[in-house]
Length: 114
Length: 114
Image 1: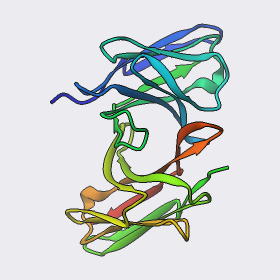
Image 2: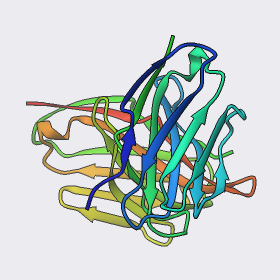
Image 3: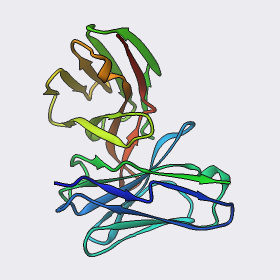
């Protein structure tokens, strides 16, 4: 069974640009969560999608948005990039609709904003 | 506000020793606590998930315990090996402002000395 995949793995953008990251969950998983990891703040929860609906949301500005498609694949978009958005972006999928179910992570997308 | 703390931030031990990693959380109203391993530049690998109704989980040389009353979880690694070198993160799932969120600690960077 294939794991969680994320594309692209590495991305370099400049300030003011926008970026879209993609996450394909494990087959059969309907929940996808997104996280930002930085050396200073550690791992921070962005949002979670379940059955194409945003179910939970972290404390990030509106520049960070996401969506989920009917096949459970999810995309995350960051508009008007800032230097501080440089981070490793991780997505995780889980099987059940319960928020307490086990999460499985992808390898991440390393975003560098210049 | 739920906070998850991991102490120490880094740990070096000789190969073969048993060791304990600590995780503490401020709000006992957590749904579960999950331990992860992260290798440099990689995503997270789920190690153990303890539901709020459980007290411990075991997988191979790993044993994780959860004490909600004291706000603590420990990850015990028996007979450590150089391949155990990684960053270990704990994460608690809890309700915050009507949303369910997963809060991560900043991790303990473990180095097993051959």
